Image (cartoon, rainbow, N blue to C red; front, side, top):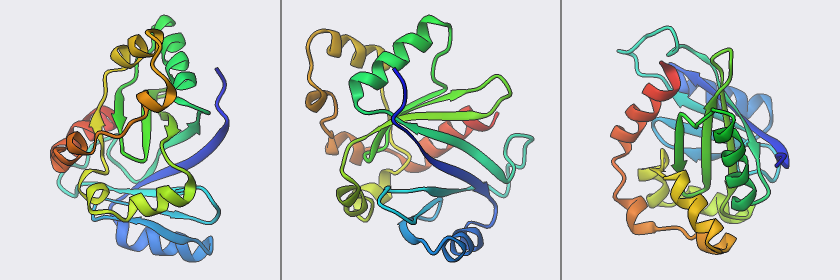
Length: 191
């Protein structure tokens, strides 16, 4: 299954409070996500086009350096994303991170050169995504909750609809330990 579009880029930085405003000015973009460790801007109807993740000052490693974090591709629906997961799994490639961000259901892979690639499906329209990104729930859980792709795939093959597979479990999302999830995802993506 092919992606629908190239969606966004994410940059890692030690200067998140400098980089985000600079790019917002440069691209004449609006701020759509503004948390201490993750910020994003958009210049069109996409919920985010350029995002910034803050690098921890005390953990300067080879992969934990300023620059491109990942490129992202949007899939038309969760069924298409799960078929992509199945195809990649069968070729021997599993996601390094599989998460439900609330805004999206996302699978992150490592390419042969060590770069990160995100494949995801949107949960909301662009307008609803902008609104959700401003909620306290999203601010406290933006890193997302881990998901089990095999469980989702089995549910889909059992007849679960797109809507059922994309239903947001707000209670589970609210229970996310943001700092712990950021650490775990950072280890997977930057080591």
